[in-house]
Length: 256
Length: 268
Image (cartoon, rainbow over all chains, first blue to last red; front, top):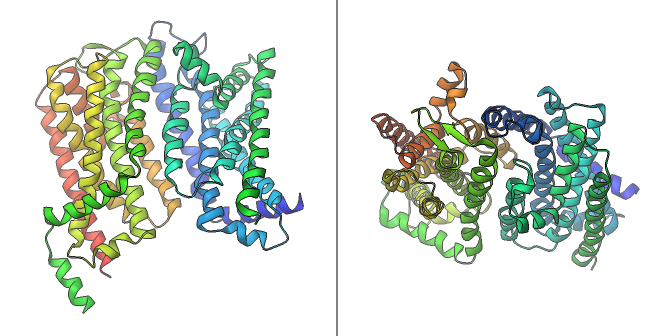
């Protein structure tokens, strides 16, 4: 564990140089999305056929969805290019392994760093959500750890896969064929049951749909059901499998 | 000697036959990554289905500034087309161009051939435009297939989307010359996200207070969205010439700035 903390300290030291820009974007982006899509498009929805989305305003509907989606996009940008870069381009891990650190320290350290980044963006996003009056109960603060868990559920399998890549083309494909479709169709902007049955089924196989359902249940105050537990189990399973897979792939690539 | 060569390059006007070599180089490279090119068609389609029909089922219909009522998918589709032209051009120029300029040092090698700085700017922007045109063509065909084209004027949507792509390709190239590192792209995003969200993309700007409408009307994507939406919904008028004129002037300004900056960066 001590080794993992050393890896985390390495990332934090680097982050000190860029944190201002990073935090600024993490703050500005939800403000813009909630103002434009939530309030602006929401005013069209309120004049639409049903006026609300299942009884809640459109901004309150998309805010938790965007929180979970932001955790996903943050996780995917932290675990694609940066991981391959440390394995192959910059060979940062080779340098780390020349010290007393072991491969499992690297994996654990990366997971800690990802958790830190997710905590930061989720917290900032949640504060913006509260400013837009889309938080309706004290229990809603649990949306922060749930968004972090969604990010880990998506990011750790990607991390395991990214360690094995040698060009950045697969990352472009991941963003185009996985991240963007999930962002648009994963339940953030409209209820997932409006999708064709087959597409809806596929969406439920991905972590984002569960993350969105869970954060939405928490911020709108409908979290007291067995479904909640089911979503947590799915997300935790994704994260656990992802970490285990990263242990394997990092060993394959680095322990020679 | 190098200084003399530099002077010669500086005086060189851009030439299509030289710029075409750079386009050929980009096309050759992408033959290996054809899946990336194909994937560019998927993204606008997803937006069209997800936002147009998914969100559209919540919105119903929209009354445009012209006073006509349209289904939400008909309203939002041309705006998504304009956005896709912008994003495609910016990705190709700002991000990929920066990578080639700063890390691959491609243009240092290119300058040791008969190509000059202006050829580089022209070549890269042309390549971005090729890609963008292919996507725009696919987009308008899909729109027509889904019944989202409400006017025969939509035939002009393709050249209009090319103009939008060209404008943002020129701006993106100019921007890339100011970027210092990958973190600076955060700032590029801080500009792109509001353009995407506030240019009348998802709802008419008449929802905004007057001062905000004025601000939106001086930004480039608004004019792209207005142009495409007018063409595909068939509300044609002389103000469209204003949209076109605005985009033409901005693209030329971007081109001049990009070339001037590249000369400073590459012919130090």
